[in-house]
Image (cartoon, rainbow, N blue to C red):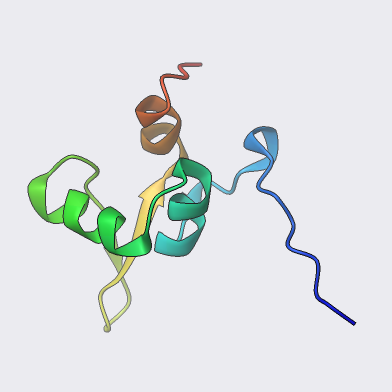
Length: 68
């Protein structure tokens, strides 16, 4: 049985998104998201002691040209 991939719904995005979630919404590679963070194009929020990246929903929607 193949696992179905659930498409991200722009109306129900979490407030803080992972690299993978942002990449899926913007339809780019996770590596591109990390590069954009280093260049300041889409700056991440660093959480926990490992420094995992999270991105604000508003910033991702702004990148798509959607403002609320």
